[in-house]
Amino acid sequence: MRPFPWENLLVYLGNVAVITVLHVLLLIGVGLILGILIHFLSHTIRTYAGSIFPRWLYAYLMSPGVVLHELAHSFFLALFGYEIKKVKLFQYKPDDLGYVAYNPPVNTFQRIGGLFVSFGPIVVGSLVIYILSVQLLGTGLFKGAPSIVMGNGSDLLSALTQFLEGILLNTEQILSRLVAVREIPAQRLALFIYLAFAIVNGMDLSPEDLALARPGLILLIGVFFLVNVLTLWAGGDLIGFVFMLLSRLLSGFYAIMVFVLLLDVALALIVVPLGVVFGRKARR
Image (cartoon, rainbow, N blue to C red; front, side, top):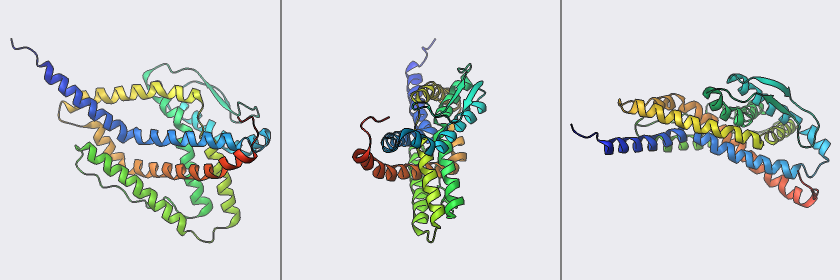
């Protein structure tokens, strides 16, 4: 009897691992990277802006972002079947402005959902800023963003390159429309800036949020790997096909996240120097 070709199996599994990494980057990796950057910038803004105003005043000014943050958690918790025990959308406590109490995950579906529960405030916050830009500024900033043209579905590196180029192209379209805007009523512009600032403030994720995301991310990568082991052997690429279907939607949404990231940078450039000069010594 001929020995089993273990070397071929190891080579195959190695190829599957590489393809899985590319799939993760295509479907969730770009969003996670943008989300983490938004989180750290929002945390910086929250720290320095919170040191300028009295804590009670800052808490109430930022309450729209707190409410949206907790609503986003609640939505994804319900979507993935978590048992929600109590929701507090806003309260004035220096270190706990709002919370959602829920039972720990009990199955794989809920553990994977923990990733989306954790980053829900960034996802929902980005979408709400988009809606506000259209409703208050009337610019249609994100309307008609060009779609990316994907190449050969089997060439994942090429697909990733084109995907990133599509995100940058969409972002350029958004910024060009924003620059071209004229005669925005001062009241609407001021309201947009205030609400966007409050929402960005609410995109700061707690240590508990980040801890909840870790098992879900690991499990999702494991699911991707298992699906690839089973489908690539037969000559198919199920996850790559799903990405092809979602690529236009993802590139547009990630462009919105890039826009929010740039908004974070602009706010940080204003708030951090003010916090350094005028802020209290004891920061939150």
